Image 1 (cartoon, one colour):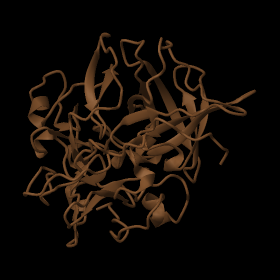
Image 2 (tube, rainbow, N blue to C red; image 1 turned 180 degrees about the vertical axis):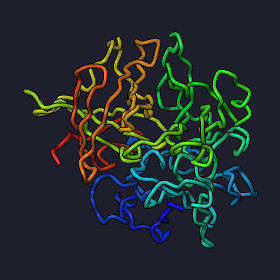
Image 3 (cartoon, rainbow, N blue to C red; image 1 turned 90 degrees about the horizontal axis):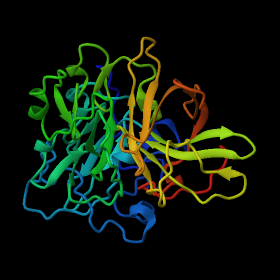
Length: 381
C-alpha cells in the first residue's frame, strides 16, 4: 500500500498553507483553512459571501456524500478542492453545521483502503483520482445535487459565467468544478457527459468504466487500471512525475521588454482557470496568445480543462484548454511538456506543437480570489 496517510488528521491553524504543513511552511499556496467562513475565503471577493453556497461533505455522515439525516443544509464555501495544491482528504467535524476541509496527504491514494477514518470526524473514505472524498458519481448525492470535486454541490448554482458556443465538430459540453460550470471539451476521450457509471458502460465507442464528476472516464482509482495510475480526469497511465505536481496556482509566461505572465490554476478534478490582474509597472497580463478576441470583455475567469497526454516517454505532458465566447470549440488548446525543478516550485512549459515556450512558478493560493476572477499584481519569487 503506497499511501502514507494524512498528517495527524488534525485541524490546521487558520490562514493559508494548511495543505503544505506536512512539508513545513513553504508559502507555495496551500489550501486555506478558512473554509469555516472566515473573510479570506469569502466567495470571489465580491462582498456577497456564499449566499447560494453548495453543500459540503456528507450531512448524514454516510460516505456516499448524499443528503442524509434531518439537518438543514449548511452554506459551505464553494471552492475547497479547487484550492488544493496536493493530494487531499476531506475531513468534516461531527457537529451541526460543519463544513468539509481538504487536508493534505503525503501521496495520492490508490484505492479506498488508503483513506484513513477517524472517530471524531467524517473523513472521505472513497479514493477518487488520488484523493479521499465522499462521492464520484451524481448517484451518490441527493436530488438536485451533483458530485463535483468529491462532494455534493447544488447544480442550479452556476455563477461561473462560462457559456461557450461549443458547436464545433468533435466537441461536447460537460459540467465541471465545484461550481457546476459548462465547459466545452473537444477531441478528448473525456468529453461525454454523464450522471452515473451506467451512463458510460453502455457506450460502445470506448470501454468506459466510470462516471467521474460528470464525465465518462476510464477509472475512479488505480484498481480500475490494468496499467499505471488513475490520473485526472480519469485516465490510466504511468506518468512521471504524477500530475499532482501541478495542482495549485501558477504564474506562467515569458520575460521580454515586459514581464509577460498570467495566473493559472490547475485543479485536481481537471478544471483549468486563468485569472486576471490590473496591469501595472513592468507586468503584462497577456498569456496565452488567443486564437480569437472576444467582442466584449473577457469572462472572469477564463475556464477550461487540463488533462495528461499519453506519450511513449511517460513524461509530464498535458493539454491545456480555455473556452472563449468567440470560438465554437475548446478555444485556446495547446499541449506542453512540463519539466519541474527539484523542489517543484518552478517549471518550464515546452510547447509540443509550436514555439510558445513558457516558464512558470508556483504562487500562494491567496494570490487570487477563490473563484480566480481577480489576482494581485505579480512579484518574482
